[in-house]
Length: 414
Image 1 (cartoon, helix red, strand yellow):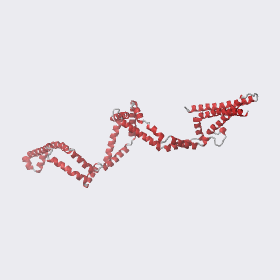
Image 2: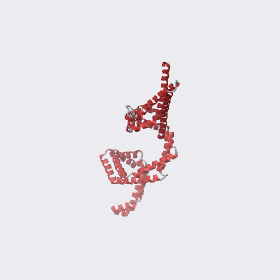
Image 3: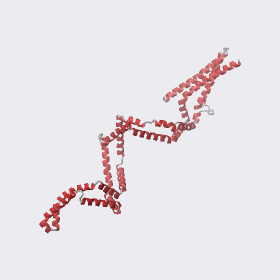
Image 4: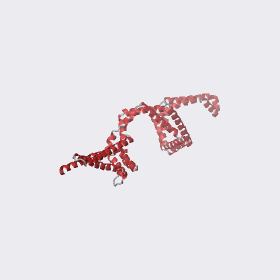
């Protein structure tokens, strides 16, 4: 019901109550007039009814009016109660609400009925809502990326990257990596990938060997240089073939043993720590790290920008896929539904109980900040219509009481 409709109803019922009083007043004066010209006994009964009805109507009018304003503008003590007591009303109303509505006993049954997941699932299962959510997520992400200051992001990546890098225990990292290589036999794979390249290089080094032999031993080179260089190459190739084909070759075992011997040394030796940290600091300088960070952010930003605008991009497909998956889980995954509902209910329950005092203060402060007249008008608008029935009932009940008293008087004393 609108405020205007409430005003119209209040006005109509005030008119009814006042009109009934006027009717009783007219009846009373009419009976007084008839009593002077007639001895009919019924006139006294009607007069008594009308007289008592007027008294009842006036008494209840005074009581109802005294709640909201001064009767006839006269500042009679203990009238205009609401305006004069608005602060107390606000305090009492706030305490009443918290004591009777915001208690664990009253809140818990309603909280336990909450089905937040069902509401979310019903909404999310609609394709139009899925599309809208996807667009909102993309637009929100795009705004974040566009609003970011490139310099701030690059400085942040550079700073945090440098901090993270310096937190690494390099000896531990290197030794653990070597242990992993041995455990997974990756050293054999590395060796097997190097040997073919080594053989290819040696085959191409025939002339280099011959030139070195000629440089150091020109006489020997003159008589047998070609044969020697060829023999050296063939010997080395043959040796590498043996290493490549024999999984148990001593060279392989020696390499493995060298790695094992150095693992503990790298982990515990202060010299190794200094060497590794020095190598790190020489290789990754602040300037280089800043350049790496700039390249990284530029690539990320460009990739994201293109993904935002491309409906078929991996990012868009990923978001769309996960929204559908979320909708399915919220519908079918009973374990997830139970957990989420439990979390939400617990959170709401705790938040309400934690902020009960704030609710009481809010009600008290809100009512206290209202103008007294404004509060009085608000309350009269809400309950004034019903209070007019008190006036109507007071008129009728008063008349009946007056009639009963008059009747008893007539029976006892006449």
